[in-house]
Image 1 (cartoon, rainbow, N blue to C red):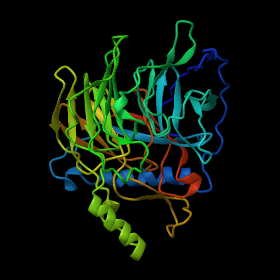
Image 2 (cartoon, rainbow, N blue to C red; image 1 turned 135 degrees about the horizontal axis):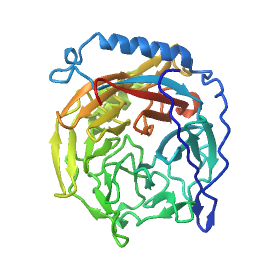
Image 3 (cartoon, helix red, strand yellow; image 1 turned 30 degrees about the vertical axis):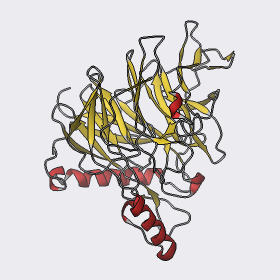
Image 4 (cartoon, rainbow, N blue to C red; image 1 turned 120 degrees about the vertical axis):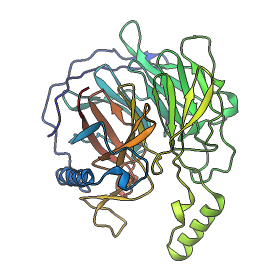
Length: 421
C-alpha cells in the first residue's frame, strides 16, 4: 500500500429527542482489513490500472488538451483502497472531527436505511453510530473540524442539524434554525459551505418531491446563517449568478465561498432524449441535462459574487476539497463514462463502469486549473474528506447495477506535494 501512515482517532455519540450516548468508547483494536475487492471490483488490478493511466497523463501536458490551463500541478496523489463501507452508501455528508470520519445521511443501500457510521483512520475499522433523528437522504452539509452541519435533504424538509460535542464530551445532534418556510419540503442536490464560527451557506439545488431531471421551477433562493449569533435565522444572500443549478461543487478558502459547475435540464433536450431512448435506444446530448463549466466566488463581507475562470470541462456531482488555504481539488464527476477492472450487470460492458474520474486543482492565486490525474473509481455524490495529508471517499454512485447504483468502496489518496511546502 502506498502513502504515509496517519494516526488519527475519535469517538462519537449522539443525542436525539432526549436520549444520548457517551462521547467516549474503547478504542477499537487494530486489525488487518479484510479483502476489499468485491464481485464487481478488482481493487488490486485497478490500483495498477490507475497508476498506468496517471503515468500516461504525465506524458501529456494539460495544455495540449485544454487551452490556457496550467501544466505544472502542485501535487500528486498516491492511491490505496481501504476496507469496504459496511453498507453501500451515497448522497450523504462526511466530516473529520477529532480522529474519526463520521458518515451520516444519504442512502444506505439497498435497504434505504437511516444509518450513521464512523471510520477510525488508524485502525481502519468502522463502527455504527446512532442514526440521525430524521432521514436526511441526499443531504448537503459541511464540516469545520469541530462540528458536522447537515442541511436539508430529500427526506429532511427544512431541518438543519449540527453534530458536535457538548461540555460533557458527549456527541449530540443539535437542531439549528430551520430553513425559511418558503422552502416548503426543502431541497437537495445543493451546495453547502461553512466559514468556521461565522457563516453557513446554502446555494443552488433542487426542490424535493420531483426527479432531479425535471427541474422546471425558477432558481431557488440562496441563504446564509450566522454562526456567531445564537439568535440568528437564515437570511437571503445575493443570488447565485448561474441561475437554476444543482449538483454544484463548493469549498471555502480564505473566508470566501467558491462554487463550480453543476447541471440543469433543458426541457426540449430532455424530451428529445426520452423520445430517442424510447423509440431507438439512443441518447440526446447530456441525456437532455446539460452540465456546466462556469465558476464563481462569493464574498460574505460584501454579499456579492464574482465570476472566476471557467473549469476546463464540465464538473458536477463531485466534491470540492480545500487545501493549504490556496488550492481547491475538484474530485470528479464529469459527463463521460469511465471503466475499471470488474463487471457490470445489465450492460454489455465487461467492466466496472463509473462516471468522471479526473481530478483538477484550482489555484485561487493564479485563477487557473491544473490536472492531478484520475482516482481509482469514478463515483458521483461522494463526500470527499481531507485531513491535510490524505483524501478519503466512502461509497458513492457508480454507473452500474450492483446495490442499486451505490458503491461500498473506500478510496484513500495520500497527497504528495511537489517542491517545497
